[in-house]
Image 1 (cartoon, rainbow, N blue to C red):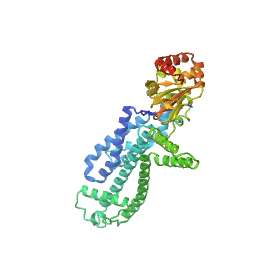
Image 2: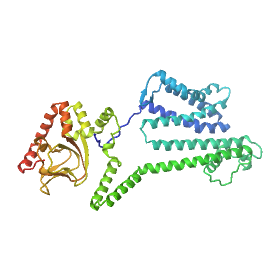
Image 3: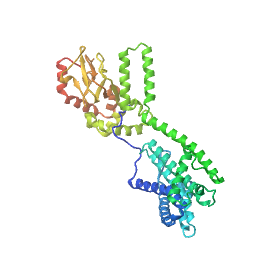
Length: 456
C-alpha cells in the first residue's frame, strides 16, 4: 500500500469562482441589512423616508438572487448537477416560495409600507450562504460555525429589542415601560439603546431589575426572552468547547494514547531508552502528520482517486527525485502506486547488514550514513541526503550487504522492493534502463564504495 507524505500546500475539493464569491458576499450583506436594520426602521416612525428606498433596493437584489439560485449548480451524491431543469426543480421544492414571499412585497410599496416587514426574513439567506461555504471546504468549518452563532445572536438581540421597543411605543398609557421609566420625552436613539440594554441583560440572565415588565405583553415577551437565553447560553458553551478542542487539535487525545502505549512498553520490559525513542517518534508524527501515520492517509480511497491525490501530494517531491523526473507520466503513476514510503527515526537502520539486496531507497528528506564494521563512516562518499538513492549495488548483483545504512535524523524515503520493480518492468521495459542509467550517474560514489569493499 502506498503511503503518502503530508501536503505542503492546501488542495481543496472545490474552489470558489470570483464572481460567485462576490455575489455571495453581496447577499450576506443584504441579508444582514434586512435582518438587522429593517426591524429598527420599521419600529421607529421617524425613519419612514429611509425605509422605502432601502426596502426596494434589497428586494431588487433578492429578485436577482432568485434568478441566480434557479440556475446555480449543486452537489448531489458526490456529483455536480448542472442540468437546468433539475436545478430549477430542486429550487422550486426548497426555497423558491420562501424567497418570493420575502422579496415580492416591494410591489405593494405604494399601498402599505408595513409590507416591508416580510423583507426581514431574507436574513435566512445569510445562513444558507454560509452553509454553502461549509460544503466548499474553503474555510474552516469551525470559523463558519462561530460566524453563524454570532450572526444568529445579533439577529435575536435586534428582534427582541425591537419587539420590546414596539411594546413601549404602542402603549401610550402610564403602564407602558417607556412611560413608567420616564423615557417618553427622550430621543428614539435613547429608547432604542434602553431596549437593547433590556434584551441583553434578560438574555444573559443578568437581570439588574432596573427595567421590569408589567403589562401582559411585556411579561410574555420577557418569559420568551428568558427561555431563549437558556438556549443562547447552552449554544455559547458548546461553541467555546468546540473552539478549545479545535485549538487543541486533538493533541490531548493523542498524548493519552501515546502515554497508554508507553505504559504498555514499560510493563513488558522494554528499556527506558527505547521507550524514550518511541516518545520522540510520536512527537515527530504529531508535528508533521498530526499523529496520523502516512500509510493511513490514502488507505480508504479508491485506486483511481488515490492515483490523482498521490500525484498532487508528491508534486514537490518529484523535483528532488531524479527517478520521478526521468520516467514518463504514466510510468510515474504506476510507480507511485507500488512504491512504499517509510519514516526512519534517528539511529534507525534503513538497510541492514547481511541481507541479500532486495530494495533500493530513494531519499526525500533527512540524512543517512553508512555503518561499516560497527563504525559510522565519516567520509563524504558515505553520506546520503535528499535526492540520493542507495542499495542498487546489492539489488542488481543480488549479493548480501556487508554494511548497514542508518539515519542521522528523521528520514523520509521511498523504498522500491523487488516485487514492485519486477511489476513495473513488466508494464514498461524502459524502466530497467532508466533505473540503471541513474545508478551509473553516481559512479564516483559507487567506485569509492567498491574500492573499500563496501556493498550496499
